[in-house]
Image 1 (cartoon, rainbow, N blue to C red):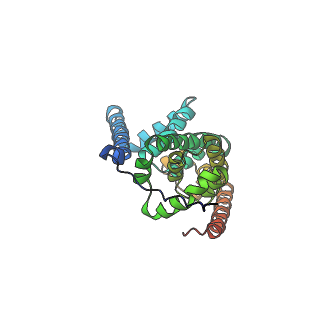
Image 2: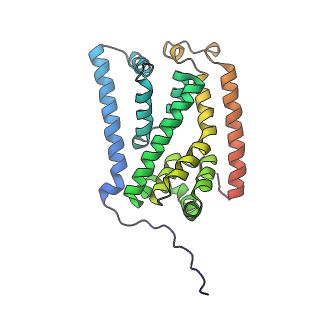
Image 3: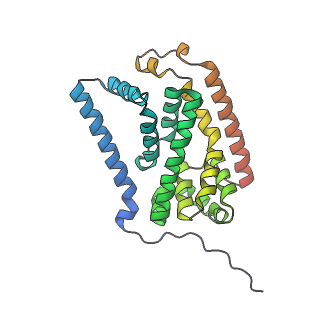
Length: 247
């Protein structure tokens, strides 16, 4: 019986300038649009930047606010915007229960969007989106993703690999969507709860009013968030040691 040859490593194929830089162009367009809307609203209404931010928070508290929040979370990877900030905001506005619900929906819709772009743009996306330090990790998990998508993505989420990198990689490798999204929900839940609780511990109205003090922080929420954070870091280190991943 012929010995099976090992699969060749992933190689970047030649791509056009647009394929290499489309993410930067989209992100720049989104940020310019947001900045223009923000400044335009402030000038028309005569509001200060702080008052404009408070108006945005008030808008998110309306019945249509959750839909707007989920849309923002969904488009977040295209603007290279931090998921942690958006997650904290969800907890601060809606509290631990509904904040978790809206964050889980939004984060997995953003994961689906990045996964879809990974399938469409392939190596062009992966080459521009993968940090150099993560390149070895990409090759390490590529074959495992093809063989056992659910458990591999679950581990990748639990050891806190870059969230969007995992999404793009899964799309590029055409990992089946169902195990991808289920593993993403389960693997990201500890981190989601950590930052939603941290956001829920803050009184966002006091922060905008300038009343930042210890009394404005819910110690129980913050303590539980800290416990989850420490537990997540401990689990991530154990899994990284077992997986042989540096960092």
